[in-house]
Image (cartoon, rainbow, N blue to C red; front, side, top):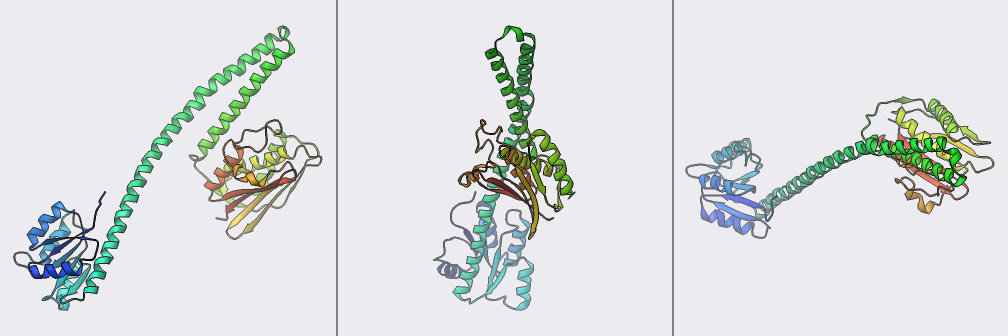
Length: 373
């Protein structure tokens, strides 16, 4: 990382010219490093990183054009901006030759101080921007490296969860069922209740692991986008959700749904979660009602799933889409607290967004905005 004042190489064989440039640029926050010949200038480039070079053209042994050619050929100075300053070679032919050599500007003597100051300020500002950009790129590379390591650790953790943690759960479930079956006559009701509690919690933990694995895989799953018939998708989702959460007197009102471009399996997961939640949280109502709608607003299609169920306090709406964030206890409605996080993750992957509106005791509406294309 380069720090300190930007360094400017000033090359001129006449000391009075060096003094003149030094006086003009004295108020700039730069460090001037002077050379009286081309050879001396080349040696200085070995030990310093310059932001800009001001080159005289008429010099003995090696003129400014020759020096510029060598600077462009060296890897370290190939992109060093330089400006020719000359009192002799001021005709168009020499000016064009200067630009051919790679000069960014050509200033003739005598020059106005403001012109040189403005030109130098421009390149110093450009230099600062390049330094900032390089630092940003270094930080991004570092962050990318850290992210790669985190992803590798996450993959290892996911593998461990998938294989190592689920195996004991299967054993617990299996042994519990054997005890309940083979030793049923030897246990009282309290013992059976305790074993059923163990089995129930083992099943719940397995569901929790399944949901976490699904959430972790979402970022890796390759998306296969196509035009999705949302009428057919909603019909299939309703059939599956109603089997999972049977509800008496449930009425579902589905409008004609607009098609959208997306991954059909991921979109199915979005609406399965939203519709299942709507059925679950309206199940205690005497006449549960779910309304599913779509409309186009600008470049987005907005889908909504509305219910007349338990609702929620809008004060806590920011928690809805977080992992393990629930606004209702298990005693009210069973759940894990990952479904809406999955909904949000899938919507983000499609370039969309999700939000919700609700009122306690009066239901909730969940919205999914997906881009038209």
